[in-house]
Length: 121
Figure 1 (cartoon, rainbow, N blue to C red):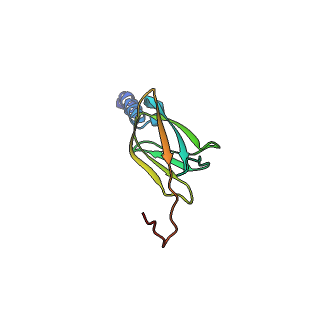
Figure 2: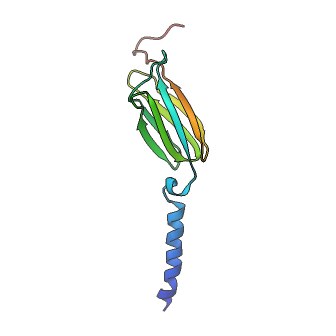
Figure 3: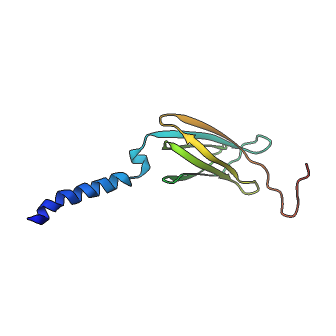
């Protein structure tokens, strides 16, 4: 008889656990990041790797044929990293995504200097 009374409590605990650790995309309001990746001459970069993450969410996409990308994700603050061979890594450390909105990112990547050579300014 005690076992039968414990079942509702166990189910309640299980449901609470699932809600607390559910995939953010199932339980959070969403926003969107729309961006374009450019080089120093404003030419669009195809195939750059864009990593968007925070403590609860991670997404990795590549820039398209026009250097563009779009990601839907839970509202929050994210770190955005963009990488492409031959270019320096681009980072934004505290990019806020609002619920039910779109934020735009314009990424301008600089050419990576070969090792041993330093740029004189």
